[in-house]
Length: 294
Image 1 (spheres, rainbow, N blue to C red):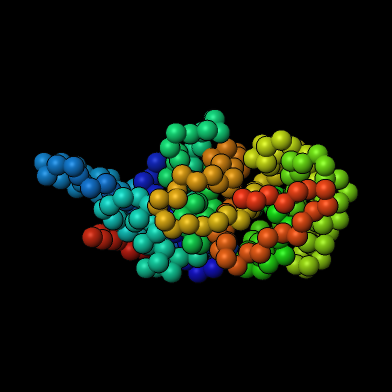
Image 2 (image 1 turned 60 degrees about the vertical axis):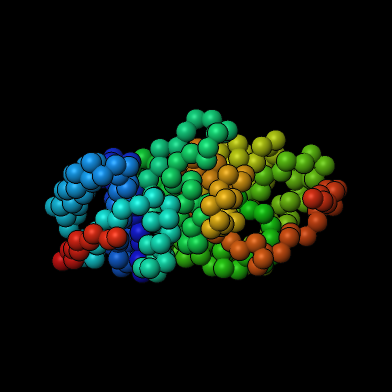
């Protein structure tokens, strides 16, 4: 991992993510790119506000320079535009490997619109996104929950999970939420063991829980295990017209109280999981300032 992107307006929520990203970059010897996005003024008379916001962003960056004295490279870029397109554009231009974002989340599962900007990035990003809620530290990540769909063609995702495990020196807890009472727990436990062997996973536990709602099942298990992070695959979709589609990963990001790492998986590359006995198949313009901290 060479480049970490942190969209940041220097609010407390974003600064929590920035702190985590800087610590992670120090551990991985990566570069941190802080991206501040200013909205285009609706009226020409509002242009002066744009310069004011830019000044505030530069001031926020200067504060970061004084606080963090780490041997990593940090750059600050200020752009003007819409949040999602600017973030996706930066990912492409800068060859970003990971996006770290702060999120506040919400209380209810259902939302008229998709919710936070973090959720939008989770749904659309072609690279992993680490969503940070609250203040945490890299050294505290020791137990990572992996909600598992039992597919045997997710090599890219699993390799990234292994890197995640190595980086944090953590234990993995594979989790299968069973929403079908006709499927025996023992059957799913066997499938999870096969999954571990198939991908050569180490320091891993296998867990099956019955729950009517998969999202609630994941959150409940995380609390039960007192886990430190959730890692999930998601079907990345860069088409803004699909941003309102159901996404369990985005919902979990919005409601979990711990960091959530999500990784986009190309649907065309992931084959369906084998059928389970007893379950019927369903038919169906850039301003920038740079800093190298010695």
